[in-house]
Amino acid sequence: MTAAAPTHTTAPALLAGLAADRATGALTTASGVLYLSAGEVVHVESALSPALGDLLTRSGALAPDGWWEAVRRAGARRRVGRYLVENGRLTTGALELCHLGALFDAAYFALVHDDRPARFRPGVAHWLGAVRPVPVAAVLRESRRRRALLQRIWPDPAVDTAPLTRTSGAGRADLPPRRGRALALVDGASTAAQIASALACRTFHTLVELRRLAADGLVTPAPPRPAAALPGLAAPGTAWDEPDTALLRRLLDALEAL
Image 1 (tube, helix red, strand yellow):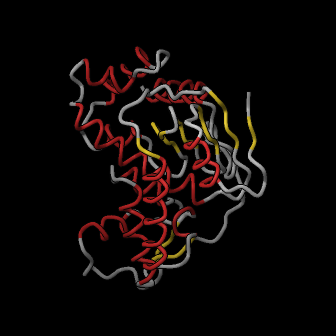
Image 2: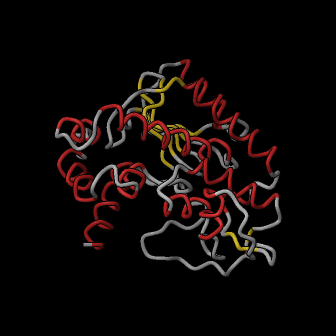
């Protein structure tokens, strides 16, 4: 059963209500999906932030074949996280640390871009399985903190989601290393999420550097391009996948890359 939120109810307000009800299921917003168990957040995904698997494999913490073995063997049972730990692929602490970072990154996008009604699907669980539940109050507080910090650095939120391009003054070399690495990947086509994924970095850290670059006049949102649907990619504004559909899509992507 799918429950739609009233049009006047924001995603953060609905999430707080679900926490009070100790609900279990998936809350889908315009930019992501938040999974709850007994009123706590156990996982969040957004097309605007790197997925947990990307962060683990591109950082070198986990080999790609180890990640996809866990997805194949434990995804249908919703025990991917536990499988990684039980089979020695990751320590519990490493998994929890990376998962927490990915959760807060995705929650920022899922909650800040709530221009369409959210919908709640009772009983739905993610194939990753629970790693460490996070209270909804902590998720909402951190999302607000990140939004306020980014606003202070540079007030234009388009930097977070639009493809970015360098300005004519972007050739200077006196930048801190992390900011310089982010600038090097600004190519007129890549978004903040894609740059973060290429750097094997959590999105928020990349957003901080990109907004600082924008404040310094070194990057700006690229001019809009004609919309073109790419195979396997959702069009902008498309609701996030159902959990089982997302699992199937990721498996197919992995097989095509072999």
